[in-house]
Amino acid sequence: MSEKRLPLAGLRVADFCWIGAGSYTTKIFGDLGADVIKIESSTRLDSLRLAGPYKDGKPGVNRSGYFADRNTSKRGITVDMKHPKALGLIRKLIAQSDIVANNFAAGVMEKFGLGYEDCKRIRPDILYIGMSMQGSQGPQRDFRGTGSSIAALTGIQDLSGLPGNVPAGTGTNYPDHLPNPCHAAFALLAALRHRRRTGQGQCIDFAQTEPMLSLMGPTFLDLTVNGRLQQRRGNDHPWMAPHGVYPCVGKDRWIAITVATDVQWAALVGVMGSPAWALESRWQTLPQRHRERQALDALLAAWTAGQDRYDLMRRLQAAGVPAGAVQDAHDVTREDPQLAHRGHWIRMPHAEMGESIYNNLPFRLSRHTVQPQRGAPLLGEHTREVLGSLLGLTEAEIDALQAEDLLK
Image (cartoon, rainbow, N blue to C red; front, side):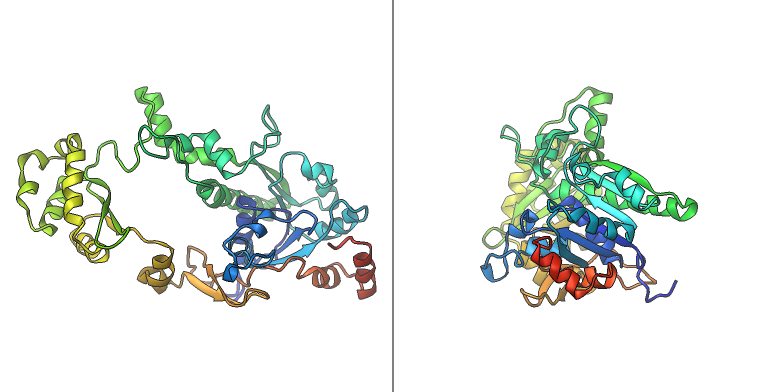
């Protein structure tokens, strides 16, 4: 393989995904070189296009930063899937695709005539992934929901928050942006490897609730082995102390500090200048510190309140104490030296928003320079390009389909 050839170059994805986890899955493939063609319609927008923040605070279907970051490296076409001629057009696209991806509710693609068996008849070696919330079979197959619904059903929302308060949850962050797209991409890569070795395609029935359970392993083990049902505990830890977030100099400035061993505690005491209170016998072992952790947190917070978060982070790290300044979006994108060194933030042009900032891929390959290839597509930006160069339609034929309101 040439070093200039991206790892997934030559693959094509017919992308029916929208919103979060599905779009992020296909984004990964696009950033790695696959030709991902996002199929949309102005009659039923990907609702992420209507989610802020918007460039310059001006709303618009092509101005969502959220949508843009989840749909890099894709080409976008618009097809009204309810039009009588839509199915014939999409079948032509699938015939030239390696992967068909969707994250609709179970049964929706079948209603379009685009279920796995339908797509298999078009291309026998097709790889098909359906990412519904609960999978295509079972008593809850028809349930619909978003990341917050998935977090609630799988237990992580119950564990998120402060003791005695209502479950706070994590928004859609974990379901939509971590376990689901990563597991889905892994499953597709495994299926691609199988097809390369055997020539066989297959259907991947992906339930978005199930990857979330991989985050809950210690919780389930605690219940099954110890008979203990874990509860919300905020920043508290079952055995480490101190373990939490502590105030620093400035408005709403904080630092996270974790002490897992007596050696780390001694190092923390040294950084603090060995104050008399920290040398008391009641703090010298981990069990002692954990028993009186609330008092310890108050004493530690009184000291950190006079410290600069970055300076303290560097001194603690140098002493071997895990610590991290709590950063906001400005800090992460403009100030973080490690992310800047790794080139995590990249800027790419966008047809309407102009130059915009995007997340790079979170890994580097020694033989390839991998990063998003282009900004997110405008709604229908590549319709004529795909229909003409890929599907072989003439300009007159495309004009006729446009006049029939198929390409909207």
